[in-house]
Image (cartoon, rainbow, N blue to C red):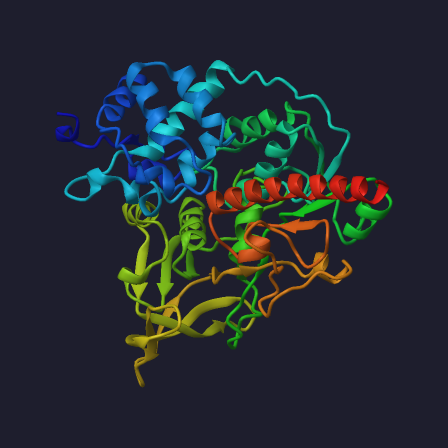
Length: 470
């Protein structure tokens, strides 16, 4: 009976209207809609959905509580493994994780786990039911570098264990990529991100903003002078890549990182903003990932005729299917199988277009995807005034270069084992600082693993002291 009910999708803003505003696209489920969708779950004895969740949320259990209408119990179940359900329900790639493993998806449509998680998270925030009991302090201090998903998840777990946790954030607002990278129309900042972070602060976690670790203070000083017994580095990957093609230094060429930071963190899309953002009548975004979709949809909302230029076919697009679908609905034009070879400028030094070349797919490369190959003589131009490079990011080298004995790989990422332990004793790392740009939920999973390892680190130190004393 349950699996014969059609999958329920949340209502959304009309595409023509939302392409002109920064209000959230999806309205989410009502209580009745959530209960109906939850009734589709067949409560598998071996829930593959749960095993594919990077933070191991007890998915069948919380969905069953939603089906019963006991939303408070559902929220309590989720909170055992995640304090950011309203965030994760909006931005996690459920289609390749929990929903991708749902058995209903084998012959039909998977349960809409993401929208159910979002509903529970939003219901919890609206009803202010998160009432944490602060644990007894254990007298040990841990420093967290970065207040993004990895740092927040690590901090929450350590706080529950009784640690005194201080997060050091370089920007003036906490949240990391949640506030500077993901647009308001996908993830509201005040109504969702700020309120989810306040739950973590209510556990006793202290967040200090405007602290650049490597300049204001260092990892070495935190360990040697400030009384911290361990440091977790969750500083993300905010150093953008460029193509190194002619014309890339013209006015009007920006990284997606800068473009989105201005719009999201600094509110530059507001007409009266003190930090305006330039987006000409026509904007070309180079790339095919989620960041590219965020940038091109932002440009559309700023009034641009917006294009995605991607060197592979649509089948190889790394962005979420939902984001690609939304972009197309909003009038974004996709130029597939082509690649920029030059940014063209006018006599004033401003962008006037992009020169591209057509591509075809050859043999698979190291990633397993077919390598794009240029088609000789197929060059063409796309007129535009703004070019946004959304080609990926790497970690800022500042922390590694100012920390003794911290190993990095050839991509500039910190080297850490599966539990976050780095080459420097007492220093742990996780999220994009280790993997390069990835997803919010993977960063959270890394932060939670590191919290467990940090707790073990303190236990081992205590054991060593006792052994030495005896």
